[in-house]
Image (cartoon, rainbow, N blue to C red; front, side, top):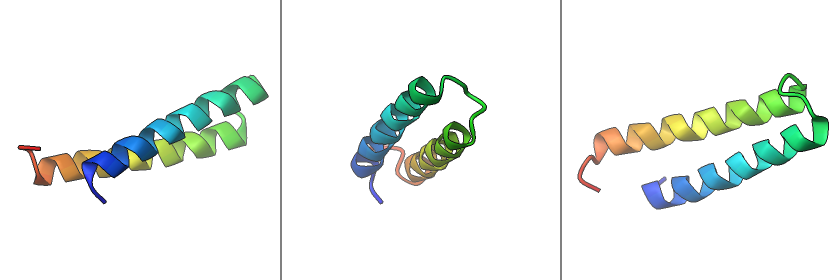
Length: 56
């Protein structure tokens, strides 16, 4: 996946995480934690792509 696509997915995942936190009112709710893991994975993917293509 390319950086641009990952940025869009990261932003969507971040918004979903924020909404879940607002819905459940707790950062420790299982759905909030699961979405946080999804966001972390996307950020890690983005960082790996940036390491491979530092000039983009």
